[in-house]
Length: 70
Image (spheres, helix red, strand yellow):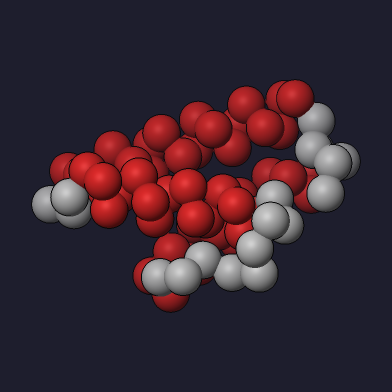
């Protein structure tokens, strides 16, 4: 999947926000980083879906941004 630089920058910004929200909610920082990166990998087509099903909505949001950036 090819994504524009602008879309990728938006996705990274969303990932930063997601990571911060997970940590604020009490998630271990390493786990929050893994979950966020996993959703990004899924949204860019590297893997099929996020491992943690709680991250599927976030993954869908990232996929939408990626699709808009094609």
